[in-house]
Length: 476
RNA sequence: CGGGGCAUGGCGCAGUCCGGCUAGCGCACCUGCUUUGGGAGCAGGGGGCCGCAGGUUCAAAUCCUGCUGCCCCGACCA
Image 1 (tube, rainbow, N blue to C red):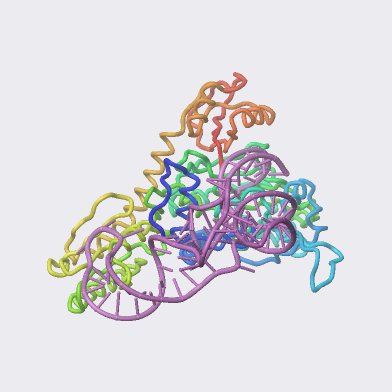
Image 2: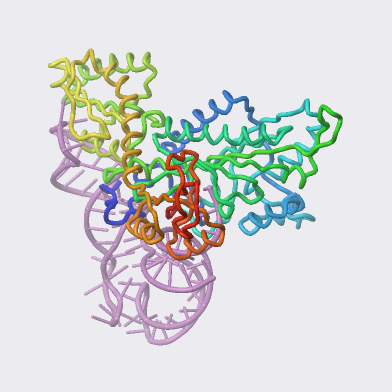
């Protein structure tokens, strides 16, 4: 491995790719836009997945799996949906050496195939709500790809729920965007703005799209998760009706919601620095990396005894740890390596420490080293896991808040966008006005945040009375 | 799809403008000895259809033509 990464200040895009590759998160696949998620990166995904999955189950959802091949006819059933997705689909035309009668789309998302199944499963209000999630891969033939942030194939989860009333479905969509907020903020330590998208930005076929929007270290926005209230659009397209309590046939109300491996990109772009990745303890494959140091076999025995004592304690405390006792690499090399890989805590134990009955502890998110009595090491790690998690979030939030600027006029908005950052201001414009801003500034409305504390004002573009603040930013 | 860049041992590059001897460097790898507290040292060693296909030439990594792939920057998107 070559030393270091491109500095963020020199070339942020290059820095990002360098970190992904040098921290061994992912590598390019042989097909354009595809990505090999390497074990270290996949382990982060597993941690995110497990945290999310627990939350989904706590809110009453179950997992299932639907096929990745979608008959072309299914794709064409929902007009907006086909318009939105067909151009970016990979299509299988041959199978078993023969041309297929009907081309098969590789799912870009699973609404169509899931709703075709729901049609069979739903007959009565007693069958509702249906609360299903699936963990899957999807394929979207994007023009421009970037590791984790936008790849041709990516991993995600997609929840698809069916309800007997609009109110219940709307509540579900809101509940799930809040689950995503918690996932981003409490697990990934990424602060997010939460709220509906404008009509121009919403999902093809949705009535309302809610999103969580995060600010990356280059002050650009990343849409980190979405939850859609689909109304009866998909039910109508797939003819999914149920008999309600009054014996009347009705179309069901639907939601869908998803987060993807993009979250890993968000993690890198939210917390990383010029030394590499910085991982929040909750998703770090190893919360603490222990580096034993010795000179000669005698010293080794003494050091390793201490290491085993410490790891036994960490095990009891449920801390994920790794002992890097590779004898080929020098301690210095390992320090750099684990800084690149973003391990939150590093502990060094060498002969000097054995002698003084201490350990040396370094935090990835802070400069300097702590020297502490051996007996306190386990407890200190246990505490730091929470402290680092919290401080990473607070730092990211401070950065975001400092770079979210209230604007009154279009001129001010332009200035904020030019300098990099989020502009928030009163908005009463329509889709056309939004497009004008996008064309002129490259910024889009990321969301209309739920959190509206500023009362009423005048639309920054039109000057018309407005009662909502919108957030504008350039985005990934 | 428009603009730019790159393609040479596993990785990163030099060499290409101006054709010429055995294609070179750093890292990684193998062997041995010495070394572990911020990217260890010395000695020895292995590994190349120079992206692909044509052409020019006594001679091509180098010149010409065509193709392919990937990356970066825009328009589209999680």
